[in-house]
Length: 177
Image 1 (cartoon, rainbow, N blue to C red):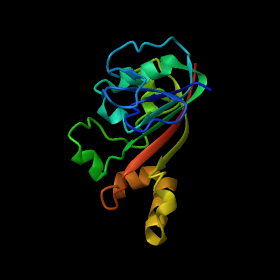
Image 2: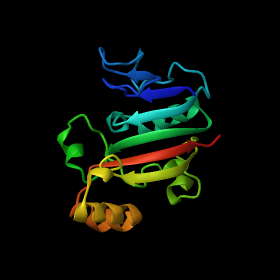
Image 3: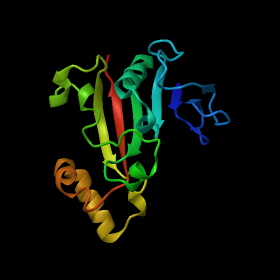
Image 4: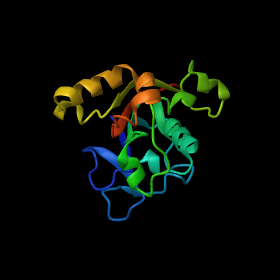
């Protein structure tokens, strides 16, 4: 399995080919994700990891289109980033955007935003989860709120996200070609 990790930073996934902008990182290739096209052929990667990187790019739609281009049909893209009410989003001046459960709707057929036609990239949502890595450490009321929010995303995001802020949101997306 060929794994591409974009924005690998200083802790690259074992076996992945890492790309990052920062010299001295664990990247196998130093490259700006806002510089297109990426130096990879079409449909090369089985899995693409984007942990805490897409919130930093200028051209979000262009980056998603490049990820889609270099991914094999049916491959999985793993994305994580700051949730809209996260203090981590607001405390980092390099963040350009935060995410909600609807961030990728422009690329998912059948979603209302898809019909706007912003992109040729097509994705399928496999999973969307708040604070995925934090879930096992939470106990009692904190765990209950997190579980409820994950089951009721639209209600949570529209009414309670800033009352009980969560930190991160993760997506698993399948490439449709």
